[in-house]
Image (cartoon, rainbow, N blue to C red; front, side, top):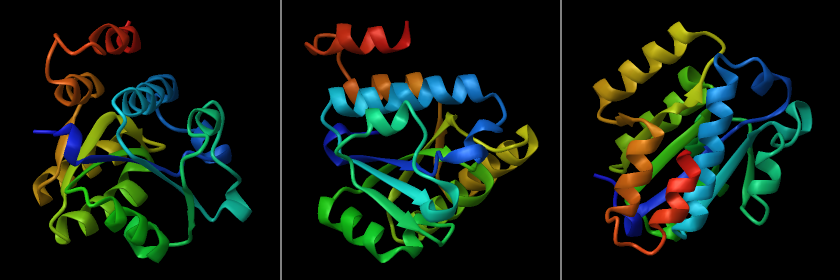
Length: 179
């Protein structure tokens, strides 16, 4: 299960025109925002990546604003783990659980999940906060990540797993994220 003190949120490549053509974009965008807000509320570290930003552009709004102050690591590799700066930032955090959100599920999210699993990191893919251009690609990628050992869970499951207790003083603020 997710442990707040062991987790880092990794926000992957929500940029440019590609982000605009994701399947079920409205749900994706809402859940990406929820995950960022939850991480901020619970003081989880966040790492962000941008795929060749000089060609694809910066992270799209409203996420760029929500992620102000978060390291946004440029990369050309599809897996975040192929970028030394990402690996250094992740290792410096000393966390053993990674929460993955972003695009595309069957490319960058998938390759990152597999590399992290191979490095002994527990991977949680937020199934309704990742997407691909087609639902089939997303579905097949989620199946493959689960088969490799990742856990695929919905946003609300992640939010409540990270909070753990309705007596937590941040419970009401967390509820506002899902209403």
